[in-house]
Amino acid sequence: MTSQSSDLPLGFARHDHTACVAEAVDAAEDRCAREGLRFTPQRRKVLEILLQEHRALGAYAILDKLREAGFGSQPPVAYRALEFLVDNDLAHKIERLNAFVACAHPGENHAPAFMICRLCETVAEAQSGPAKGALGDVARATGFQIERTVVEAEGICPACVEKA
Image (cartoon, rainbow, N blue to C red; front, side):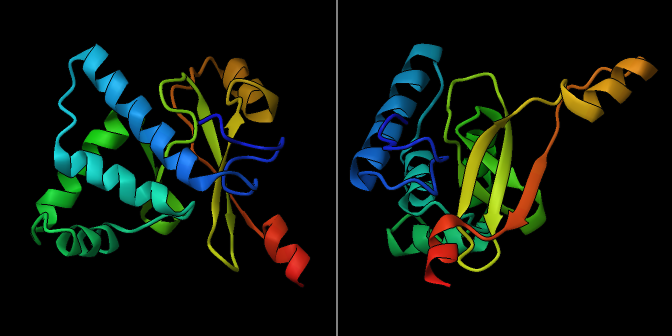
């Protein structure tokens, strides 16, 4: 998503959110077409729901929004769409919240780190380097090969700091 107006991670940066959503959905459609992935109406709608706010949403909140949009009310509808989005790096699961957020860097090979505002629950995604730093040093020293990390930090976002 390129509509970011500063060096802040998307989610904390002020930006044209309508363009942000449209660009992300268009990019997902293009990528799925290129890679032969089925971007069904349900999957598209779940991605749009995740993109509406830069907050993590639980599966049942997503299911409620799907129901309101006429996509049914069975939990497998939401879970299958979320599984597709996560498996194809279009969304991430925020383990701490047992919720999901749209990927800010879809199509890029990256190790995301999430900053979660404990006041407004905004989630911003930044790049992380699991093979660097103390964890990478310990892994190399023991011969462990890091394949995946989940970095989640809780704190207060810039907007909430300004309000205080």
